[in-house]
Image (cartoon, rainbow, N blue to C red; front, side):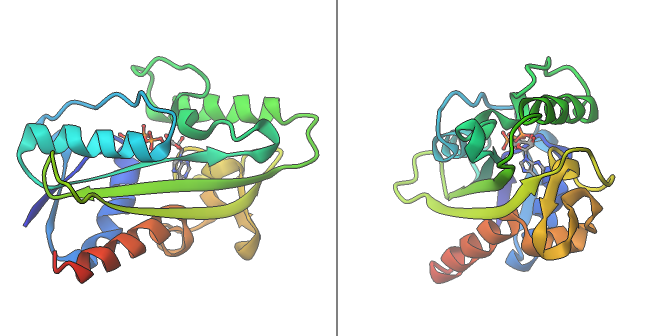
Length: 202
Ligand code: ITT
C-alpha cells in the first residue's frame, strides 16, 4: 500500500520514515507528489493533524498519515503549543534552522525569570484510509522534560537544543537519532498507531 506522509518538515519526515519502517508500506512524503502544505488553522493538535491528513488524502486519492506536534510549557499557559513552529512569527520563507533558532530564543527570553521550567512535547498522529474516512485512527504521545537556560547539542530539530531529557541527563539535541526515536513523543504516538493499524489489519 502507498501512504502519503502529510508533512513538509524534512527532519520530522526523516524521524517518521524510520519509525514507520516496521509497517512495511510505502510511505511517500507529500512534497514528492507536489502536494502543497496545508494551513493549520485550529486550536487543537488533533484538529490540525486531521486537517493535514485530509488535505493530503483529498489531493492524492491515497491513505494519509499526519502529525501535529509541539512543545507545551505549563508556566506559560501551555505556550508555544499548537503555535510551536510559528512562535517567533518568522516568515515561512525563512530557512528552517533560522526559524528554529528564533523560536528557541523567544522561549528562553519568555522564561528568563521563570522558576518552573517543566515542559512536555506533544505529538498527535492521525491515519485515514481516505479523505472522508469515518474512522480516523488517532494516537497521542507525550515526552516530559525541562527547558534549559541555553542551547546544547546539534542533532534533531525545533526545540531539541533547549529541551532537557531527565532520563538521559542531556538535551534532546545531544541524543542520537536512534535514541531520540526510541523515547520521543513521536515514537510513542507511532507505536500506538501501529498497534491500531495492526488490529485492523492495515
Ligand atoms: P508539518 O506541519 O509540515 O509536519 P511543522 O514543522 O509545521 O511541519 P508542526 O505543525 O507539527 O510541524 O509543528 C511542530 C513544531 O513543534 C516544530 O516545527 C518544532 O518547532 C516543534 N517540535 C515538534 N516536534 C519536535 C521535536 O521532536 N523536537 C523539537 N521540536 C519539535
